[in-house]
Length: 138
Image 1 (cartoon, helix red, strand yellow):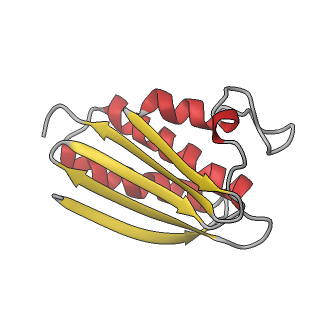
Image 2: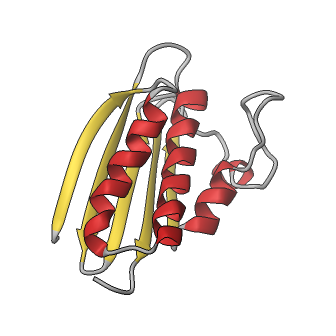
């Protein structure tokens, strides 16, 4: 591991921008293009928003660990909330358990902007999303 940071924040919508900016600032050591940094910001926003909207009925926390190995950024976002009943179903575009105001595109967006997206979840135990993105120049 070249470098890492770890933080925990309350699962409230106001922290989505903070999380996105913290991870993207950390990634700056990889000399990303504007497009690459925007990809990371978008994917982190979607993952954190999923925690805020779906994980908890009440108060809860979101853990974020970001690591750099060689020229690859890894971001792990996790909660200890409700978990996901059916991960394959949740990954389908347009599927949402968050009500009519949700688009159901969160996982699709993460998969579009990052190189890898892994989801581990169990009902009643929470969800962990680990994403990675390779950077060409450093």
